[in-house]
Image 1 (tube, rainbow, N blue to C red):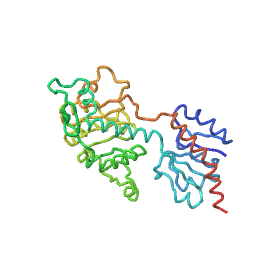
Image 2 (cartoon, rainbow, N blue to C red):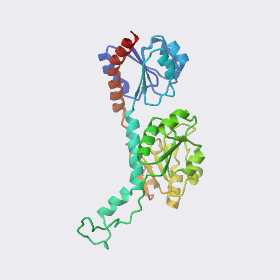
Image 3 (cartoon, one colour):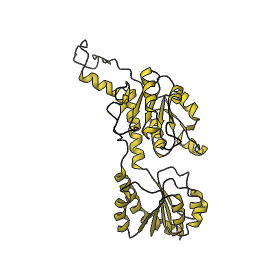
Image 4 (cartoon, one colour):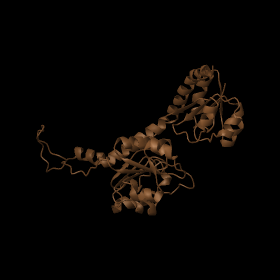
Length: 326
């Protein structure tokens, strides 16, 4: 059986996957680009797809196709109806990095809204005029550090981009009671929006109306500098910006200026144009910043292990599909 990964893989993933595929007695092929994937469709039995557009025409050319594994849970790039018509199973996989980056996005947001960094600093160096008392159910010194915290419930979250990570962020944000809108070049189908309880908006509207804006688009010539002076000025006074995507998408100088000026309420960043940050970077001294060292993702090893686990489940899936045909 021949397994084709249509979208390429990170360095090291192929080497980690190869032993698992060999133990199954299968052959592994990895396409260099979409054209290469299209050329190899006719020879594959199992497709492993991330962003590759698998439409009815491609499915018709994949004459040996017995199953499709989506890397992720959004399947708009796959013609599921055509697969079902042909009796070809389609399975999804929650990507480890999508879950990890979504967790980290919420962690940055909570650190800002609950003032965790200044709170820790206050614990280490409390004000001299706050006397210690023995606390009980009725006696305590509430917020003796004078932190200005806020809650997420009822806040509006705006997602720039809506892929696998943004989907997981949206689900977590909804659990915190936030409303969720997103800006995307091609909006989701209306039935998907209803199911996920998210709504599309133009970028300008999203910036104007969101209490929190979180960046989830890949870096490209079109997205570099996407969030600059003009975009930051459009955001609500006191709004927060979170970036766990790529550093070059946000103009860092403009962001620092907006926070220092007091327009933005703060920012949580895990990604930067230069990593690690130069010691002279103004991001390190700007107020109301939570910075982490590009640590949000789960890493290539977690991805390769997740793919290997799901490949090992495919023999049972294919046996069940064959049994259903009889």
